[in-house]
Length: 218
Image (cartoon, rainbow, N blue to C red; front, side, top):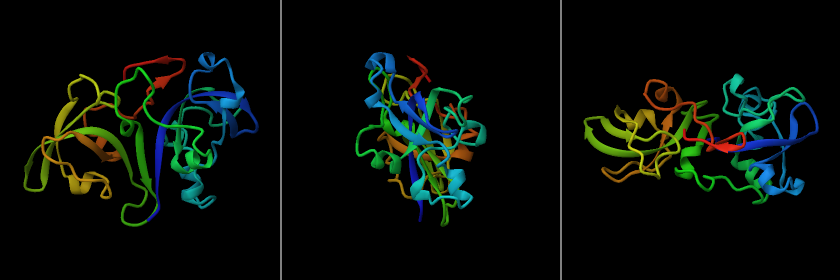
């Protein structure tokens, strides 16, 4: 079963090599003295859509698709006219390719857990083409096949913020089947189906912890 994990990071484009290939910083370059050695090269055409179309394999995906094409990445998608400051959702393959140079996760000064800036997408098998987003959650109650689950808005799960609400969910149908199950009254991550999120009063689409050159509260 092919599954790709994506991590949402802030992005500043520093150099353009082709209509889809660019170098980018994952932190404000003004705070890093515009050090070009800290930039990373990415091909924004190596996306889930390209894999679904058969142009590349899922294991070759580097970034999620552009927001206008159903994804979460906001830089690009085509240069030189594309957006140069925004978000880049990168794959585990891309992080491995960089050999540890780029580290995902919550940036200093921002609340939340790393998994709140993560999602997974399947490309075959029973979960074919499904997406599951990471949220901080707490299982409150269970009745028959339904569970009452509290969910926090993205980026607020590790702070003092209250849950965005509580909803009755079918955890067997609405969450990533490969993720560990929730335990009652023990807050933990949950990977929630993209289509299910659309019916909840919770922030979605998710944004990385920074946008442009400033931090913001999701």
